[in-house]
Image (cartoon, rainbow, N blue to C red; front, side, top):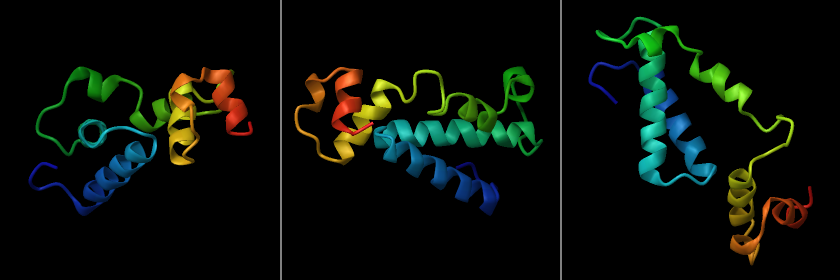
Length: 107
């Protein structure tokens, strides 16, 4: 996190990083996702000195996340199912397709 960021942004960063790790992202990728998201929110709320046009005018990170949530027409993605199967230690998951992962998880 940048120097001078608020405690709220620190908590937000940690929460996003932990969520990304739970979804199966590597530690490096989770940190990147969290930093980009928090920086965009800081830019949107005027907390940063500089901001790109995309950061201030594009759809907010929380709205985009809601649009990409599991409630889509086809349900969770194969990557989301795979991450859940890894958490539950389901054997043979790497050879399974999306439908087979869904069945193995009891969905």
